[in-house]
Length: 309
Image 1 (cartoon, one colour):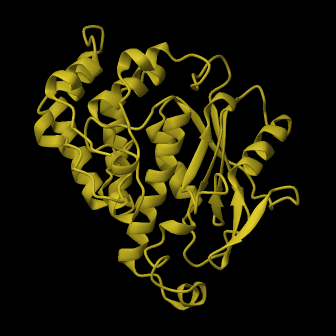
Image 2: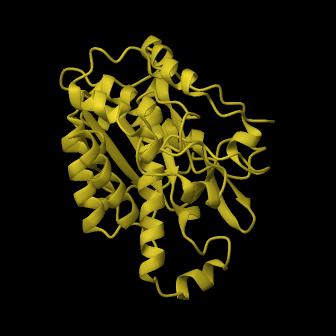
């Protein structure tokens, strides 16, 4: 399957009419774009775009979506994060830190971390490649079934996070995450995001001290995975216009190439729903990246902020 990068004309068409945007948003999606946003690399054989025919989602097609995307309304502005299974692992990501990033990224929403729950007996599982995997559908069903136990007057979305491996259907080896947009739920696994996952046994991983390099890689991947998947629940489909947080990923190489920011097209989509102050979002996200040692993204947000003043 061959991928052809969209032309500048196609990208402009995807952005649509910008005349009603606030001045800072206009600057954010038009000023010095070539200096900040890289084109999507030509995919290799195992990459997402080599295996999936993504047509790209324009602003017009995004606006036409109705029941299949989350839109904050009334008191319904809370994104619940539901940990499932044990996070008692020396390489488990700090969920409170990841929630900090989500609070900033989805400005205007409340992001709340719920108490951890165990897997239930009716969640379908299998043994694959020496580890237990859980079917995503069982976790989705659990989140829908237990909605009444959360604050239904506040809930907009609920997503499960786990250190267990997950799969979406029998003919798939695994999946990093999967969303049910119409029901406002999703499930995301962090277990494969550790740099040692494909290079050591489970026992070796437990015995290997966590280096600063691996801490940063793991944190970056977990943040990107959660933001990407919640983005799907807000109606953002996979991006083909630039290197973007919403690019599809099939492997570690693609994942580490994926930035923690939205391209102009995807930024416009999210802004149309949340109406955030893009300067405030960029500044606070840069500060949080600096706090937790995510130097590359901190630098990007700081430079981009300077371009839109």
